[in-house]
Image (cartoon, rainbow, N blue to C red; front, side):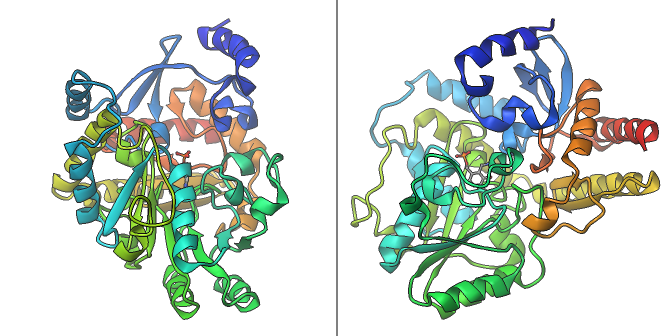
Length: 428
Ligand code: PMP
């Protein structure tokens, strides 16, 4: 028995499913989760000493690669001065200044500890500001596990195939309306049904929790126009896209300005961090200035701020960082698509910059319903082969592949393409 198998055997007796977050249990791909011991650059090493090229990157934040020396130095130096004070620190001011300078729609920001908290708080601010209750979200988008957002959600909810979560009273979701991603008419219809009740539309500007589903031309700008028409707020959930597609996130990439934005893990460089921010007049609704209560004992934690500041500064100051990363993504996903085409593997490859995914379906995937046509068993077989040949992919069909600055074209990416070719040659 491997060390990972031994650990998992004990873990399932101590933690639900043996894990602290569901998709990590590898249930849908029928493999034993690998217990990770360390990671450097593009690689992770498990408890048995196996090394993998990592395409999960802690679900996005490791955009510079694991264990970046500057980030690590900043974290260790800060940790030596104390782990938490529960009081204001200079790094919080620097972090707020940096986020506001990189993402101009964010005039004020509040740090929290996760993407879930960021979304929960942004929604409360939107409801407080508009004095309305209803929220429109999209099927297949995931916005964390707060009660109101667990309606037709993506990510682990979709992977597990559960329609909605138990333990969520109907009262908590009665104001959550679901629309179809990439379908403005479905949004228009909801606005027409309750024109003066919609506080906000929340959207992943690139769907990344039903696999990767980019917005079709005009979708995001159409949402902006509908929100303006009905005096509702537009919230971009940039937990995945923020500081990944460009220094200013998806809103800069697509040129559409939301009222509020949520950020997650990437701004902590892997430390547990989230943030929400936006127009000054909305953020001034938040306590202690305004009447929307929101708080957090560990929010703006000094070590987390040091990690995030260091990573975001590198992203901001490295010339052509995003141009190069996105070009590498275009090349890699383009090659992967051609390879699958060559071996006649039924697939749809969706990607945008360094974010991408292979759906095992012959259909074009542009929303939740088409994503669901993917053959999850085929993904599971592909995943298992790749894992056992040194390539660590997301353990679900409905998650993204993340490229980092540490993935080299001639090295890690070429080896990955070769491993995919070996697999499809044997199996298709
Ligand atoms: N929003 C989006 C778009 C996400 O992808 C996620 C998680 N991947 C969340 C919110 C929730 O973030 P967290 O898991 O940090 O609570």
